[in-house]
Image (tube, rainbow, N blue to C red; front, side, top):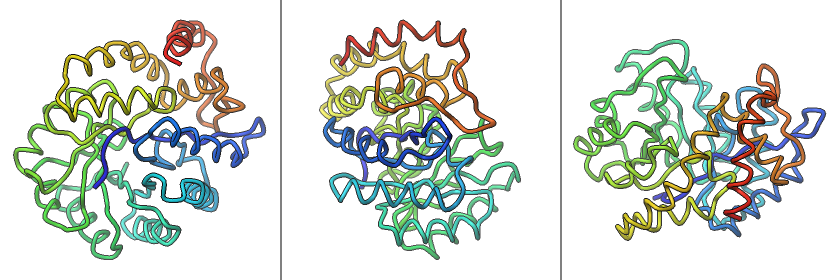
Length: 291
């Protein structure tokens, strides 16, 4: 249903910390021009955790309106509460998103049965395509392949975001074509696409969307040599984007490139440290060479 370079969109902010909706609209247009295949809004990279509910909904609404059906928009609506997730997923559906991305409930450490019941109930209550999101290092719980296989039989659970190639291989063996898999890590995107992944939910695409789109297109054609050349070019960027906690580096680089007006984040996140800024100067040169 969804494929290719799916940007995990940053949320631009003004110097005072307010969401910059004018810049947000410009980013959507830029991504469309750069052939980004879909947009994820208010995810980890979009700083959803420090936006209030009204802001989250306004960001979704702004992106949906600006995209105007020119590419799919996927809202990240997962929370640590099943009922809260149902409410927020319903709101996103009513706004007009094409799908929702649902992270595993964080902090409260559900069992596999709890995860199954959580996702099953959301899918039952909200008739919109849903993509599971497994990132144990952020959430503290791990959605196992056997649980994914049970969920893959539910019609509107259409995909999963997973960054570990060995885990992706296991999921595809158990689920076959019942669910699409997307890399959740630029560093493993090409490897996962070799295994049969349908694309990547990408931080790097905030800066090099055309290259991430081309990476997927080449993988779809199984032109692995050309795809590997792009992947090798971008590896310094992949590493640099996690020199500090995401989305700190990507917002700093986006501001340096003039894509957003400031690198402001909301506490407890802080702007990129001086030492890391010096370390990323070579990345700015790389981005200039790629533009």
